[in-house]
Amino acid sequence: MWHFPVENQPALHVFAHWIRPALRAVRALDPIPSQWLHLTTQGVGFADEVSQEDLTAIGDEVAGQLAGFGPITTRLGPLTVDAGGVHLPADPAAELVRAREAIRAGIGRVWGADRVPEAEQGFCPRVSLAYANIDGEPLGPIRQALDGYRKSIPVTFDRVSLIDLNRDEGRYRWRIVTTLKLGA
Image 1: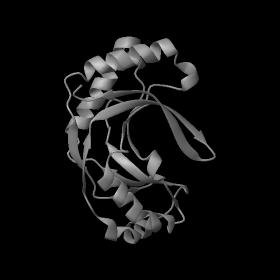
Image 2: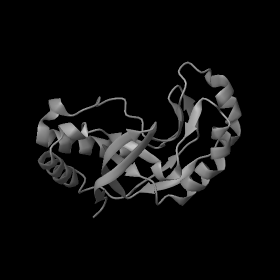
Image 3: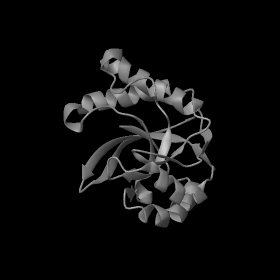
Image 4: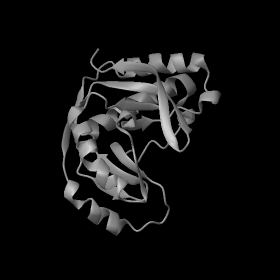
């Protein structure tokens, strides 16, 4: 999976720390620990189904596709709540969408456009702060509980990472396979 890491976004981490007690207070939410915050961008495939040769080739092709990109500056927020959890959508999102298209093009050059996973349309770049842990929970009370946390946070993404994502004990964890610096 490709994502934009956020560890070098201090304002985002301050906000996440500030809101975390309110997220914990909502029984239907699992707050995401700071070290696992990210902006998910594009899946590649299950680790046991993607060869190391393909990963290397995809990394090389994506690097070529992103060669003309510089750092991407945007804002995250204000906060949104949906059935999946609590998120900070990127606005404006156009450059992140364009970067995702470049990543998809890199995958497509290795595997063919018809094998690129996930839908091409409908990508809404965002950083999730909490995942929902109960299906069908009414959203109104959650939105009301978090209404005081309406903020917009400036961020600059200067790299994108290919990660090996795993889920164990209900938590997502990853290791970085490769990182590409934007504007390098």
